[in-house]
Length: 158
Image (cartoon, rainbow, N blue to C red):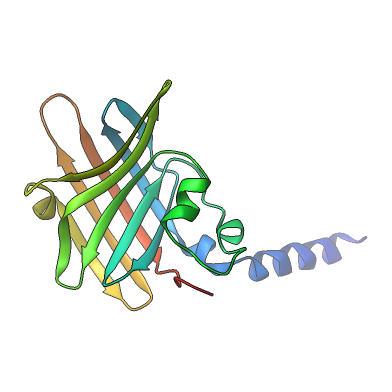
């Protein structure tokens, strides 16, 4: 196969790759309940009237998550890794952040509700198809959520 043909095939593969994964951007660090980790990926999806912005410590396999035709929180949980979820209502961020983390043999999960959260969450852009923003929260003792995201809003069912 010629170099020209290889180049064309590589370009075609790049152009045909799934767009949501290519357009997803999430970064930052999280330290909650004894687990400290770096954000590797993120996914934003509707959950009833709210939008969940889930930041994950590993790559999120969107194709695998959509094998059953639905995308929801359980798809994220099945893929493992640490997560922090920022819940966003129509009028802005809620007071609760959901988390799931592993530290050694210890697994922690649940919701943390704190009136200090909403002021630390900045939604810079929200359209029907995309959400971008950040969270910069910390407290004494080292717990923190310092993250940025610019994510397509995935369909709940495809």
